[in-house]
Length: 506
Image (cartoon, rainbow, N blue to C red):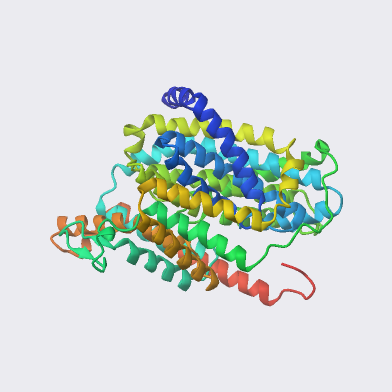
């Protein structure tokens, strides 16, 4: 009953006219950004963060806007994946395997509708899980001590490389760079300036929002300037707005299975929607592909990954809100925004800011319904916008980034820092190094250091305190299991690629 009363109060917050307008704006903008190849949810959220500061939105309204953009991007990524065979973001890569063959067979509208309904099912199940489990996790996290939080941060860093399917060495290098940048500024204990090179502007370190916008938005512009995206020359068109709903009857079970798998994957720190989509598709293929139709236009191959990546997106909000540890790159950016607004996510957030938490949860239910209503009749509009040339889109991204960052601090130094982080992000992309571990290092580095210091202070410098708590021991065991699982998946993936028959595309 407490949850229902909290939801009722949250609904009152979500139904404020300003928040409703921001929710609808976020859904539309997120779907549009997700449909444009190469941008994805991280960049979508990053692009709009400066506007939240420029317009002076409070934490609740800002989080509703950015969460709607997040959900909208997960919906929108399927449009270019199905029609152009170009994933709008990484999770949508799995949708191309069966979505594009369906479109080439004249079933584009069916594929788009199946993906929209599957996304709705996955996001709704994830939001329900957020409603039920986030408060319980927050209550359990109250018993976490400094050593336990340190173990939790270790798990976030140790698992992100293997679970995301990237090179573990590069992921750890990226995390180390993030931790190094996080140490710039005044030492929290002694007040000694560290790595500031005599610059007073660096005494407080780098602003997280400046770093996020530079690493993702500015570097994305530089990458797109170097590599022009292919034009829509496929000749595929959506000939009807409403699909044949009978084609969707066999996909509901796949959507439910994908939702469950994706939700669990989303809760894992650092895993995100990519893992949810990959695992949902892989397991659905093993379970359902009796006649070898997957990869050739099977509707279940569209429903499972779409439900999985949307469920993972909702699941990733649970560790962000309850523990203050982001479950994905996008939630890491949202966490940085909350910290910049002096809101600290974690176990006490549900007690200190119930309007923010339950207003967000209620808004997510409304956003799911709005996105389902929005996505089916407006498919034709979004596919037309797909033809927007990059030279017209990129200046808008740069202008929003610069104006938003300058309005945040009125500091020219931050503009130079914005450019510097943009160049760093571009260099790392060229070297095929993931930016997400760097973001985690920036975001969690200070708290990780502070908790380590507190634990050592309590134990008078005895390092064994890190292994005294059953919670910390359990977290280290989970970390070992995740690493073992990621190594097994990597070996299996390498064997599969070694025996890949010629002429078959991945």
